[in-house]
Amino acid sequence: MTGAVLALSGPGQTAGMSVFVDPIIGDLEVSRSAVSTAYMVGTLAGAVALPWIGRAVDRFGVRVVLSAVAAAFAVFLVVLAAAQGLIGLTVGFVGARAMGQGGMTMIATTAVAIGVTRNRGTAVGVTTAVGTAGISLFPLATERLIAAVGWREAFVAEAVLIAVVVLPIALWGLRGLGGSRGTDAADRREGGAEDAWPLRAIMRTSMFWVISGAVAVSGLVTTAVFFHQVSVLGEQGLTPVEAAANFLPQTLAGLLASLAFASATDRFPPKLLIGGSMAVTAATLVLLPLVGPGWSAMAYGASLGAAAAGARAVEAAAFPFYYGTASLGTLRGVTQSIAVGSTAVGPLLLSAGHDAFGSYAPVVLMLAALPALVGLAAPFARTPSRTPSRARRPRV
Image 1 (cartoon, rainbow, N blue to C red):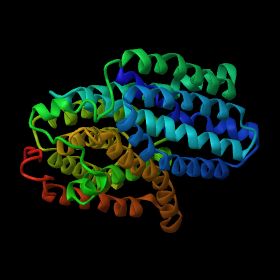
Image 2: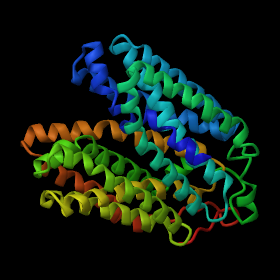
Image 3: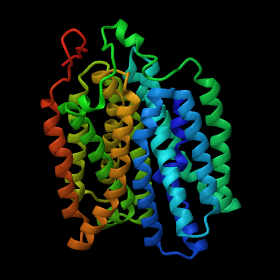
């Protein structure tokens, strides 16, 4: 069920929103730059709400907060359907990005981490894989719906889908799953921390910054090249059709990587897996200038998709591994805010770099330095602990 919740965040994801851009531009008679700016503002503003949503999960529980987030998501999709100009569009983007890409994504994986104590990484991986598969289907299904009934009606249809599927899951499907503080007893039976880690204490540990840095860097660089994929790969000699088809190996590799990386956290220290995902990301970006039509483009797409999915899967499993689940909602609310914010600035950085250098290659090579730095730092991050009598002793 959590996989279905994650999949139905699709209308708020960049891929799900992308098919509405051209119809909106044509109907509202606004420029592409104006819509892009409204989307960036909406994404950044929506990211601000995520720490509050995370705290609410800790205080009120998954079911209550998911119900509220799903209802708000549906309402904001209707706001988008009714938009008559840039102001209404921006307001709709704020809510859809905050509740869809941010809130429902965070709650789905957090619910698994709270409810599962054995083989948690594998469970997170299954949820992520199912959710990723569902998200990848939204652009195709929505494009056909827009062609059949129009973009406004498509937004309304998505709102109805959220209301009739996610709300019942939250109210009845997740019965027995409370807030993270209420379900941390299993962790305590296994020798976990008795009290929630204060956020300030967590933020003083190097592990927090390594995990958060990986989330931010992965979101920034992968969204940048995904958003401009047709243009980026076109510079390497691929046709628009070939560049668009590259999303297929990205999606398939991402599904496999979600399962592999997340399940690996049950056996290996997550910080090593973070280092691995960052190394793959950096290597993929460095090799982009060598990509051409054919197998090299498919390998590039598969590698980048695997790296992005692996980073997300490890992050979802790493925080409960190192810090327990008592303050997991608050913690993931902060990092999800960072992740959403980074996705807003990535495409703009790559576009500005292309304008400055006349080519994507130089700026992509510069961006490769970011995951390389995080990957080098990850193995040296100290395993967090509190006092000897109350600290959790993770594997190192």
